[in-house]
Length: 376
Image 1 (cartoon, helix red, strand yellow):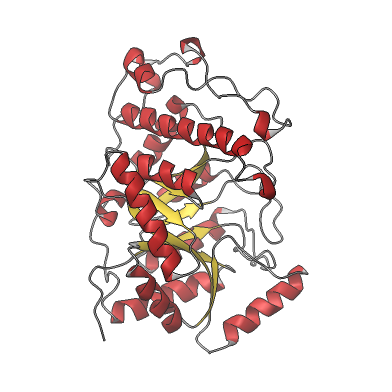
Image 2: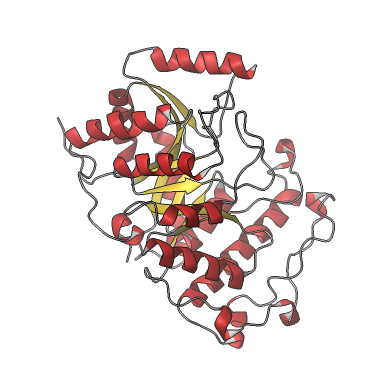
């Protein structure tokens, strides 16, 4: 058996009842603290690096639950119920102001003792038809949206460093953080630059700044599908998760992100590239595929995803993860199709399989999320 050259990093994405929209609601109050505590403690039992908590503003929750909890408040509630695992709530950047984000995420880092992250998500307020996605009329405002997001992260990092001089902060992102889109129901292609002037900035107030975060910078995570978010992630994030459907596609994506990283002047920094996978896991061959067929029938249509959907045994998934790792990936964010079934299959079957191959940790080796990920 070949021992991997470097251990894998593993995270899970927790969303409502699971990522398959036909997933049944678990017993009990799925919005209550006991439900979420059990899920995150199970992920911690499996020695996973971190969990992400979904909070998209417009995509409906999957499964039978029509609503979502606020991800940042949920992470804060879980801080005292966990000890080692990273907590990474989602924050949508489109209308965010850097002072508010910097303070909230730094506060979470204090509550967790250095285990906080921030899943940055760019979600256009106006709908984009798929057949128009790559047209110049849509790519221009999309590029502007990601440029603004990168500027926002740059300013947030400066605030985490303790910068309180407004002139210095404005120099990092001149003309940014203007009022929200005045016509969110208009055409996306007709959207003008999301800039403004210096007067659009919120005035800094010393007491409004959080004390320095235990990690220095909480971990910045993003999910990316195409070149514009690849470039954003290479410029702004510590972990970029992508959605390849083959090892060859993973290798090409990693190469593109590394090229953007070099252009951004970050070649000396560690920027992890993860892959997202939706997983249905069962020990008996064929059982996971049969379970997906039953979930599709309950949902009324076949479930498809932006990410690869894996159905199989833990050993088969371990084979795939290690094979794709040779494409340059350093980890995976797994999306359990149903909760808690596929989460426990990850922690109690996949993790031991990877450990037996020398591919995953057998104990937490650091007290902060940056430490677990090997980030400076």
